[in-house]
Amino acid sequence: MRMSMKGQAHKFGDDVNTDYIIAGKYKYKIKNMAELARHVFEELRPGFYKEVSEGDFVVAGDNFGCGSSREQAPLVIQEAGISAVLVRSCARIFYRNAINIGLPVLECDTTAIEEGDVLEIDPLAGVIKNVTQDITIPAQPLSPTMMTILCDGGLAEHLRKHGRFAFEE
Image (cartoon, rainbow, N blue to C red; front, side, top):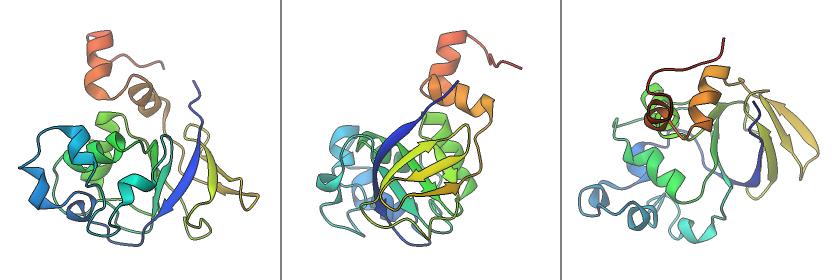
């Protein structure tokens, strides 16, 4: 099973918490996910939603997704059209929530990735090709089990599809 993706990098720094991803003032007022996604990263980069093209990547440093355990953070990232998140390190609860909804998170050294770089990623192989800079960055590969969950569209969709946890050995 392969899942390769290509898109542009949108770079953020360290300690991007879930309130920076989607501000608390919106989380309870807006129930429509498409409308909520229009406010993604608004606190850090006003108008970010308009910069994103379908398939792009969020690239960040250490401790991405720290803060609350609300599932809205990875959901709005995904709804905005981001196909994967590339980070040096990630809060475990954000990582679990992202995988559960079908949003890949790859841990790698993001220092060589610049804003706007075109990237191609292969999560199963753990390879990030920076097309713009013609360099390859190794990432922690996702396990076949994680890839099955992601390819099925997240954990709930995996269970709907198979009626149980169904992973190839």
